[in-house]
Length: 540
Image (tube, rainbow, N blue to C red):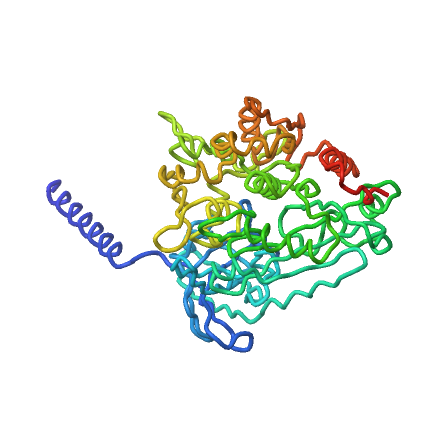
């Protein structure tokens, strides 16, 4: 009896197992929600290539970013109006890697198309990148980019659904600049950049005139060239509001009389080009120095002499201003650089680009420690290196995100076989390519460049370098400044004769100057270095 019962029980178990295995074999992957994105012919009649960017949010507010709502990116080529682009689990996502992993619930969904232009470069490479339309490389406000109305979607666990999304909105053109008494605007087509990119390429300048410019018609003025992110018509802190504190300082009796100029040189990778000659980005350094500045000096009453040209900037602009002074020492008479982007790539933020194995993590025998990407001044992390880089990868692969790491890699790296920048590291894993990293050392590592070339350019830089950074810079940029200062402190015949200042708890953007103190320091520097024969009628 016991044996019979045992045989029956065993048979039942075998049947259950067989049914389970059969079910597992036929069930396939669990379902999830996909999205079919189409271009509405009413907003665009021709096919488009670019990056479809899908945003999901639990509220009606979309906030993409390293700590933001989920983003999924998918490249499309020649997507015709009405044709379907399927955003499925193959789309690269952040912070959720795949659509299959989105938790069940109600979401608001919106799609964008960041439209790419085909560039046939002078180096023979053909690439697809977003051509700036005057917005400063921002895909959410770039004229001609397409987007959809937000759609409310219910994501159910294991259920396969496909949601249609229509790109039925287009970002409108940006209003052209209007000159005022104080601010003038200049835009030129660059011959050098047009030849490099195989497309008409433009650079511009926003010019702030000093008090008395129209009355003192015989006076020429020194120029303060201000570097920074895309300034949208602004030159310095003054945006045209004559009631602002900045305007009152600018027009006060006894204030230094300068012409102030900010550049607009958005490129296909970012809201500015970093102002140097680059294999991927093009000859922006020569375009600014040899095309734009001569045009400014032709149209406005500047003192067209190196001792009367000073340059400043913060963050991106801090690096650009220092690089312009270093690479064009005969053109500029002094630099005031604030919290510059990495000036020594042994501290590429917190990564030693030449020696570390991984940009995202520090590996120990038993642990893996994430590297910080941004910190608060109290030491808490805002996000990590991998989070920022993975977010950029979702917005645009091959360094087409318009983000910070994308432009650094584009400016500093050699060209890869496919025409895009050669990656310094695997964008997903963070593993560093030593050959690509070593290529940058003597080209864009400012400390290494200065160390190698000091014997020939040192006399042209003596007394010109001024650097200011907070010791708790949110992006760790103080670390590279320490290394640059350590080298410059060793220079002899000549000694560099400049200065570094640090803010004890200063974050990103810290400055020791208040009001117009920096302009007054610049004015004193110019007066000190001006030849005896120089007119000083700009002081009134």
